[in-house]
Length: 426
Image 1 (spheres, rainbow, N blue to C red):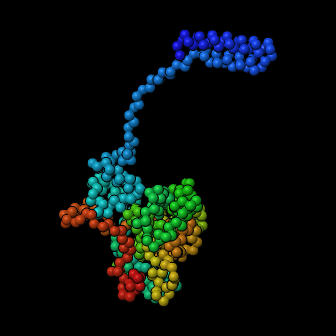
Image 2 (image 1 turned 135 degrees about the vertical axis):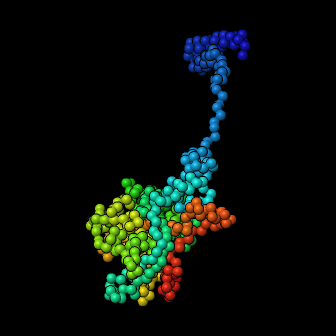
Image 3 (image 1 turned 180 degrees about the horizontal axis):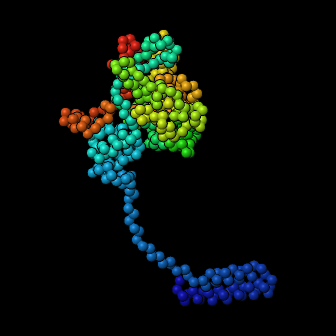
């Protein structure tokens, strides 16, 4: 509104409002007085300076926000593994950090690694696993000690075992945690198809996927280096496949523990315990010699086998790939509607000396998730590639894209005799 009109209107309203107020006051007329007051309010509004348009505040031009770095760029550089391909190097880094070196060393994968990466995977294998050479082992019935000396050969079987690698220690909580965090419980190809409908029961105390005694998907505080327990045979098998390994067969496990030797062409001589023939509870975590619970897998080093494998007796029972009762005579073999899987080695709560020895076989339902059962893994020599194997395969024109099926060879038909072979293999 122009200023001249504004001033004129203000004067007019001022005069009118004062007149109304004076008249209303003198004649005691409230309505007239109210009209005068209303006019004064309008006058106040007009007297207020008109609002000025707010000047736009000067703001700097927005800076260009760099795109978020990809997961690939956030991973450790591949230079440490000598790769010229950052993606491949990062993937190898991750798998080595997860302890999946055995999977990297499978021939179909290993031939795509650089020499530096291949060397790193082999170094990880050598540090974590021990060599068990090929050779024979005598498998005995649980009734062996009950049979007369001259008849014991009737409850023994000589089995030929191919050379393989066996974990130096049971699988720890820390190692199993990596499997859980990698989504191992959601990767159905890792699991036996028969168990798919029952996988929802493999949870911890809080309903998260994981071992039975964990909480919120985590192992108990301070037990990162203790053997993982509370896992079923199916969980142990799935972890082994994820790592590129498998469970050891009974003959493989026993051979690593007893370390058979032949003396002057005689029958095999086998140790009763990994350290010798005499029980020494100070060398193993058993009832009465330990804290009544699991201990770190690095403990009891003096009780290691000849091959340097620890805790083959004590701490936790260990699942194997073999069915329970495989070494019993047909006439005394336990018949069960449920396949029972073999357990070896005894645990921290094992009291009887007869059970805490290398030859004793126990067993349990493969769904059992007990506080004293864990496992360790194996991998066959034939499943591991080295640079010479790769070179020979490439020269022969082998198709590197062939299936990399994970087998669980265990023991082989060549190692059995007659009718007994068919019984065990079936």
